[in-house]
Image 1 (spheres, helix red, strand yellow):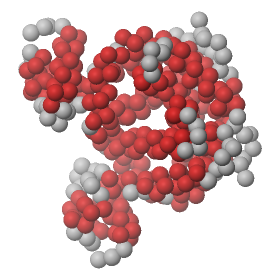
Image 2 (spheres, rainbow over the protein chains, first blue to last red):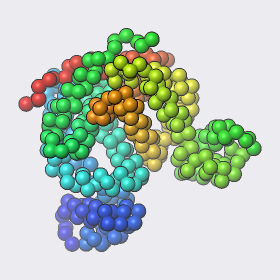
Image 3 (cartoon, rainbow over the protein chains, first blue to last red):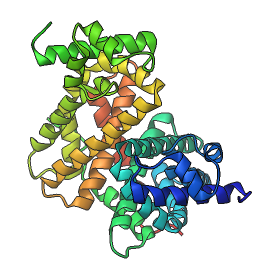
Image 4 (cartoon, rainbow over the protein chains, first blue to last red):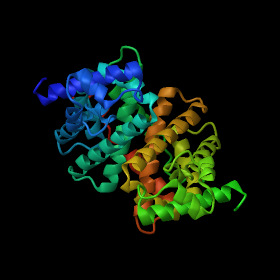
Length: 193
Length: 193
């Protein structure tokens, strides 16, 4: 049994992906995941609070990398542009996890309970991005708007990249932000009748 | 026992809100909700598939009103501006439901399972908005971006209105879209170094 926590987590994650693909999410137990990974069920629960969470093991790293990326952008950069630049620093992590993400996607799509967990994770990430913007002295209201819009643009770029053929995620990020600039430029200033 | 389905739904909704406020979500059963509303548990399940769903009874109307509002905007209006104008038509429904929403909010915030359901509902609404934009001959990619950004702006306006003091939701919608235009105007066109 491997001693290193990260290795065990990785093995549990892979075992879960394999079993969910073979028997579906509902047809798999945490006991089976633990057995496939060569550990006890108790060890499983030291790493993950429930059966769903094993599929979101990489989310923690995504949160850390995203917040660190925003913190690294120089203070003078406007908030939405700061997110634009920061997201480029998150790209390598997503590229590295692409294969895992491709395995996870159909499993998550097939189970409403997993889709709900996924949406909750996204919402939690938006909250973190908002906090990171507030630390840059953006007021709460603007930070919330900027976080929601920025993450909406980023997730669209990721979706385009994940479902498209042979595109570069850096290009998709730039493309999606450019599309946003074009769309927003056509907004009417006056209140509609 | 009232015969009209809408009345029963409304009574179940109110009974659930009362009981959840008194005993918490986990401390309440569907049997108790049904009893409080003066119907059988079987009737409860004719209206809602599970205990959570009773809290989202008003979502269906929100979806219908939102899609109808987008469809009513003239074809020539640019997509993000079309959403901006359509959201003004959704305002009266939100104003009417404000008190109910204020009762729901703390109950939903207190239970992770309800927060997850809430996030899933938001995601489903974004999908519907995207579809409504595709029907306006916007390509899928732009429609997804526009739906996510537009709903991000709208939900921010709603949050500002719900948590602020004595503001007008129409003003918040215009203000949030104006903030977006300002933010997007400061985006750099070139790829960051």
